[in-house]
Amino acid sequence: MIRDRGNIKWTAMMLPEHLKLLREWQEEEGRREPFEPDPQQMEEWDRMLHEALEYGMPLSVSCRTPGGERCCTGAVHHFDPASGTIRMVGADGEPAVIRTLDITGISTAG
Image (cartoon, rainbow, N blue to C red; front, side, top):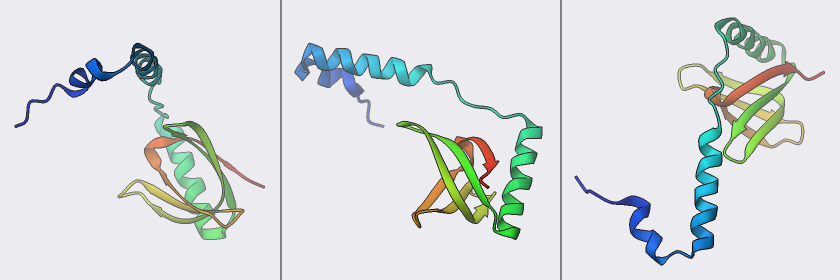
């Protein structure tokens, strides 16, 4: 097993300004609390996803990304609970793949 010191070995070559920004970024990322929906909310989302697949109704799905919060609106093309992914086609025709772990909200887009 390789015993690497990670970022420690590179800090000697970094400017103090860069180190400060990296520390601030790490603190900001660490502050994000994982979103944990309750089981009833998850059942409701599951029902909405299955109805959207069956009837072709558009949904608006809010999810977390490394860059912040993102909202995808469009038709659900595929929902795979085993792999935990939802494939959507947006109103602009762009495909989107969303992990179910990143979802913070689902609503009908009508």
